[in-house]
Length: 361
Ligand SMILES: Nc1ncnc2c1ncn2[C@@H]1O[C@H](COP(=O)(O)OP(=O)(O)OP(=O)(O)O)[C@@H](O)[C@H]1O
Image (cartoon, rainbow, N blue to C red; front, side):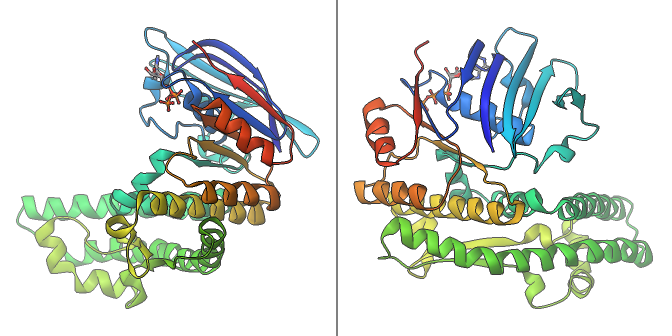
């Protein structure tokens, strides 16, 4: 699968811009703030119906304009897929596939698999557990629609249970039976989510470790661990044994919404003990593993977006990444970098066709 054409109107800093891409490698080069990442984000939009960088969708409309339109023409298994993603201030975002609008944006997820690697991924290491849950949920959801539905239902029941706990506290009352109804529903959805996360990580972790060895040259020991209280006890029992705590806190303190991933290097948290280059290698390995996993599951080679990935990596690691991209049967790749020469030197080592786009205001 590859993106042949992209056309932007009023998207972030672009008023009107058209691209015709190479089916293999495309490099966006130019000075800071010129819009290289914005092009990659527009491509991300076509896959996921949202920005990777700015969750406030209206902020992706060019300043002082009223709407944006992103149009992409993909080639997928000898078929053309024309995707149009548009947003007008005051209206709902719309995604059309070959002229037909989706009823639900979530129906579009998975059609055009894509993996992005960007400096913003650092949030996975430094931010709270919700960013890491979003990561695993995102990978599983791209190939399992039921998982996404269970997750949406779980979150809805969770919000209802939390409102009930607040209601109890505000009215100095308590009703065990009403709470039990929510406990059972949370248990139904939560147990399925837990089992799927376990199954996913059993397959994902070895792929991740393999990728890290390939990038780092094999000198460091890293680990990725699924942390969940459900490993010790079923969710229903957990919810019941934490009722008093939940009443006091006025929210649900146990469940799959508290799961986390532990990232370690040589047995210590990478957040505290990893160098910047090691942290970056860890994140790239995570994303390459995501790429391999999605490719295996969806039988389609995802588009790969590499946003500014060469900074902070020594030349060995850069050449290991190049070797990986050469060997692992990657598909279409987009690279953004401030240094045209560095990018071109790297890209020339990958024996594929490429196009270089110099953005310059
Ligand atoms: N809604 C918007 N309207 C107009 N301009 C915007 C909007 N959102 C972002 N921008 C502009 O986009 C530019 C940033 O673009 P981008 O992040 O793609 O830069 P870049 O070329 O990747 O830079 P760097 O090399 O620093 O990473 C900034 O100048 C910013 O002001």
